[in-house]
Length: 105
Image (cartoon, rainbow, N blue to C red; front, side, top):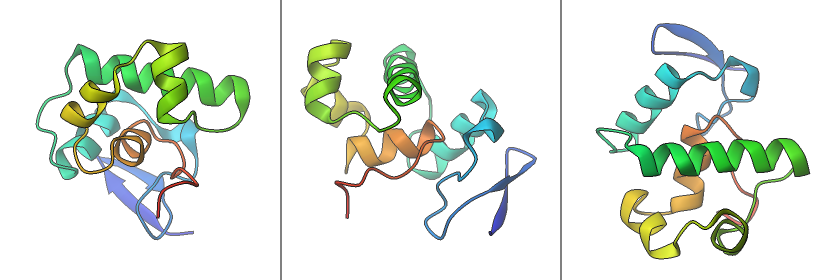
C-alpha cells in the first residue's frame, strides 16, 4: 500500500491518492487535499458537504449519490458543482478521506 505525506502526516493512499484508511483523516489533511484539488479555502459549505459525506458513509457503508445529498442532506446540486468543480462527488469524497465513488471513472 503506497504512503504519502499530507499535511506533515504519513497516510495510506491508493494509486489515485484517495486515503485507504479513513481513520488517518483530519481537518488539516482535508485542507491540504483541497488545495491539491484546486480549492484554496474550505468554507462552511465545503465542511457541510464533508460532514454529510462522512456521516452518511459511516451509517450506510457506501457513499451517497448526488441525488441523495440533495434530498437527505439538503445540499444543492448547483452549489456542489460550484464549490467542488469538475466532479463534485469525486472531489468531495477525496477531501473527506473517503473512497472514490464507484460511479466515477
